[in-house]
Image 1 (cartoon, helix red, strand yellow):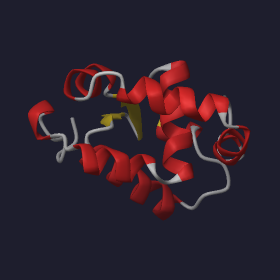
Image 2: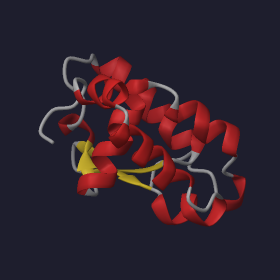
Image 3: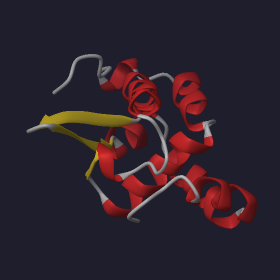
Length: 115
């Protein structure tokens, strides 16, 4: 694993909500929730490598995703079990809200590729 993954008990609600407050990061979470582990390069469309790295850093350090090296790529996965244990129902509520809000759904969908 890559450093800076907080332990489950260190995940803070305000950090998670802040990370999910960005449409691009919310798009990543939607994709990981729908399809499971993905290569980081397969997720964001039209973003520079430095921008992607920043977003992976925010999601990883807030405890929303796991990031692990796999050859020359990094694989990302949602920390659903940890998030559900810390904040029961929160992730499902956020994902459901995106699904039922056309404006948010459109804003997150335009950032993704290959989903």
